Image (cartoon, rainbow, N blue to C red; front, side, top):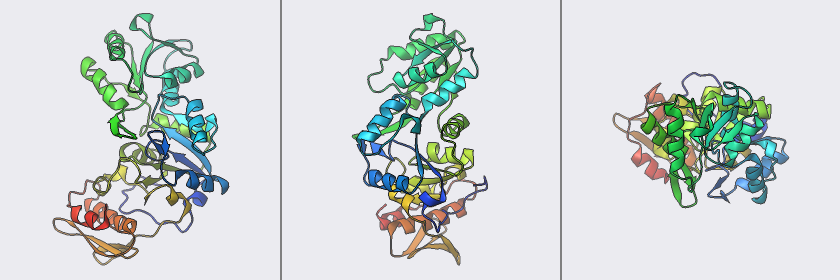
Length: 342
């Protein structure tokens, strides 16, 4: 995929699981939510794998180790090896190891995933700013992370110790709803210190580099639910992406997406990996997909027709993105989305 401005979702005559050799799958909001598999995920992934597609699981959540994640996926009915899991903890550990000597101490503000990834890179995790760390690393620590851990980070950063963050996702989906993510915790330390961390996770290049190094993917497809991490990460890496609507992104956010947040394909869930994608065609002053036709009016997006709701959404994306060009679409799409039930 080029970095040119995308003005519509693309079509595909092939099933995506056949057109791409590796699926780089986000976890939270794509494969599971709150520990439970999302509808159709287990069956869809099994079919893609049986057809020869390599499945790799790429997560910004630095709390759990690849062993724990792979065991969880396997228990859900998705057989997975630890080597098929790539975490932001691994990406940030490599980033730190590139800048400090092997054997250096690193103050950990987060969970076991960070500690395991640091040891893999020959670095020593420590718990106190008084342990003379060469770096501070912050990753998602779960709901039980003590407030005092943020203070330890601040003490070390105030002494000039470089600060790294696994990711800056402000939220994380859970079974009960949307909860604060590592980005919210990073913001606490940022406010207290005035410092800025080096960030490794999606959508930034260190995570894409880690993923490609570990998977060897040649024709990867990024599959995610977040525009500002998964889809922007694919854009930054110059690869194609599939947005699934099982996580945090809703219709209004998708229509208003700037160029770096516009996915190659849009589908309801992981079943979209197993099918071709319908073409969105220009028609007069608008765009048609399936039985729907969308156009950009003076103040709002207009939609006519009937058929599959997703086809209507794809047509609306084309109208919105074309109208916005390299900016944000500010046209009201509420009435059109309501007609689609989205």
